Length: 322
Length: 279
Image (tube, rainbow over all chains, first blue to last red; front, side):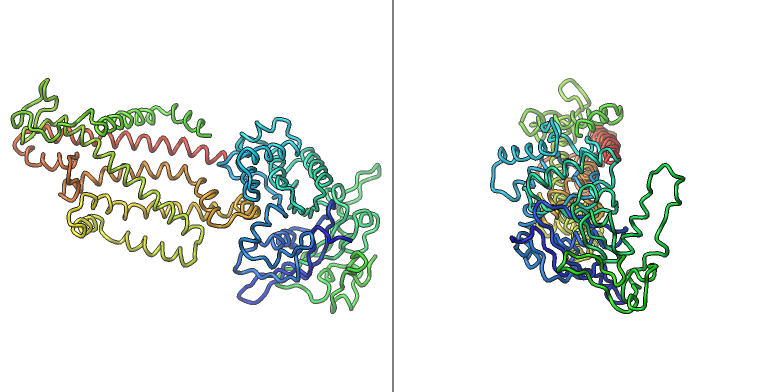
């Protein structure tokens, strides 16, 4: 079997503070195959965006520590690359789509200029070729009037159009991996459908691997084959979407699913929530991070850390799975 | 975007009158440089202290030189000093301020801030005199003194603006497509400060013309040519004797041009500000 499009091995990220290390991402590993989308879900502050930034190597050089035994794209390790060789990979082999399309485009340049600039940075082509690639990219995300969009400034487009332009920018070099960091969070629900549709279409077309970061399980269910549930910097459950929604095995995943309100004929049940609060990153419990809030907790959970079963596709990191 | 700015500027009456005044002076300066106007500024073309006539519209000075010719030539001098100081100090201020802001709290920032602090703490006229003496009366001493001291304000403004802009998401996006830091500064950060640079450079332009007049009046300014400042210096003797030609011509021109520039700068700021809010 060929190497997965994206392989992340034992990635940890921590903040260096005056009082010591504060972990934000704690020994996580996963693979994404070409043409697959994997959702990374979790509450705000659980380390989703830090994971993405660490994969791209965009974390600040001071104050943040990263350790990792390998981040591979199509079998090529990018974690050990230095400055200019790493920059050559960014945008060409791996690209990122940001959460806020309003601010992720430079306001003083036209959309077309920004997309062509990405293409020209990674290929040795002249202006005409870059322009053609740019127009193709805009058309491929569904713009019929690609020329008009290319000549527009970001503020002249709506939020959804800007996000489509961002996707065109991310896909113009046809990267093997795309990290989409909450690409639909800032958009209304009908625009969200359009963005997800285009993203999934391009994923199938170019056989791109997508790491889809979201806090919205419904969006992940719609657009991803696999899903990883993250809590306080650790992966608690790693499985395919179908099994998660049919039968969540980790009590935290089950708790998240029960928080989705259901529409039914019956009298509405009160919206449930998970008791307790997310522990502070400076004061994490030993053992399972979810133990203090878990209703199935036992002594072992408080003293030792449950692990995912990586050999058999992941499952739940829990001593007493559901 | 620029068209919107121009539309807003056009609807501002004060701004437009400023723009027209500045344009007229600029045309005069261009004609002087092209050799069409003011070429007789050093010729003795009449008697001393002639009053206004068809031949000498503004009269003549102590030496019998035509004051109109000298005023026109002074316009070119004002623009030459203004343009040169504005372009050089804005470039210097943008580059140093941009680097300081991008690498804020690093060693480069410390050095640039230290340099700025040192230059800002020297009294300006003393500094101009020192540069003039050090350069043995070179005609560029005044320009140099202004460029060396004027960039600090621009740099301070740009540094702050760069520190604000570099937090924005499109800078992360630029890093995510593999652009090295130094290119991000000049391709994505500095272009986002153009609206501030435009306004700041009109302010520097005014300050340069103003300073030129004062320095020329003090004898530290223009060496080969004539300027409004030199005319005012001459008039300090003439006014006592009851001859106001030089004084009125030079101070009125100075007032009109600076007023025009200030109105224009103000209107520009308003026109560009609205754009900033839209983004």
